[in-house]
Image 1 (tube, rainbow, N blue to C red):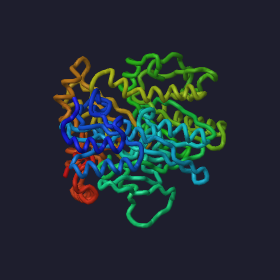
Image 2: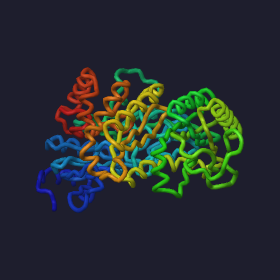
Image 3: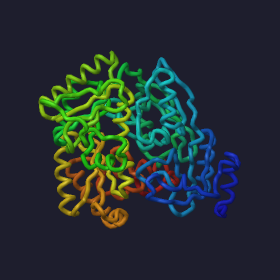
Image 4: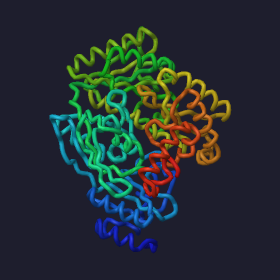
Length: 502
């Protein structure tokens, strides 16, 4: 049914973008339901502009009508920050049509793209030109660079290249007043006042709408090697990380930790992936040692102990040669095996094997979904304190909730854990989420605060954590954030109710 609200505004939006790009009828769930299906909103309209001038005109029209906007990229966020509320009064501004690569500057090692550019398309454009754009996420086939910047996305290579913020040199932004800030400079040094770029990165569309970005490129590494190591404890995983830093230096690009239960879910729901060290398929003889996979095979050679408490997936990128990278890797793993922080290890012999290992890691969230609804946490703790945090919080949850199952995995290299909580086996997952989420969140977030961590590492705040932010963020920080929001968006039309509430 066509909306009868704000007919003059809808007519103006149709004039700006063309009638085909103002959607009011039919199934709009792709724009109004969040990726995790935690929330189903209702939109006055979904508007799909094709240029920054159209975005500016849409913002001005909505501001004049007193209608709020919800900017949206690929709608793959995990904190319910890019879908409208249930009122049916908000306009979803989808940037999917603004997906062009505007410019490539090889000498300056930069690429300028529009906000709706799919992350994977950006990676492929860089690779075609002989460069690397290192931001890498499980959702890279559908998430957009505008959304990545709006949430300051992390991913698997933050350890080497940083978050989305660190990869961004300039932005084009439409303000809450419908003005355009042309800030697409590719400068690496610009000390002329407040850093507006960093203000908009991570603001989740609450201060303005990112419409384009100038991003850093890197030379393609000469070689990438991937290893999977079984470790006896989280403390051992942290020790291995320290050894990896010393042996690999800047070549260490990824360091992921995965708990046994997280991997057991992958083994249960995707047995064809053959999780290393979960089920031994070959017995080891003599003392443990790092074992390369048989050359030419499509699967890593799996050996060693069944049921390691944790496994680590690590990647080494080298700009000299594959031989040099492999020598570094083997020396690292030999030292780790001798020191006892690794009980067994396998090195991928080719790209197909490396992709398989990464596919196992990236399948953990999918396996969780197959197991049932769960309570997710995206937290960060200083790496040195993670073992103590895990031990204390595991015990706390098990003490308060009998049979609780902990899905602990994430980017140990940068201190970011996805510390998720699954219902007891055989229990009603939906009822567990409904009845215990608040209790579990309080237990986990109180522990995070005790260890001086953050309740959101890479997923953002959205609407899911807005109330929690008021508890766990300092009053001084909240006061400054409210002041910034009030100054840049005094009408509160830019994604209201997300991050801070006015």
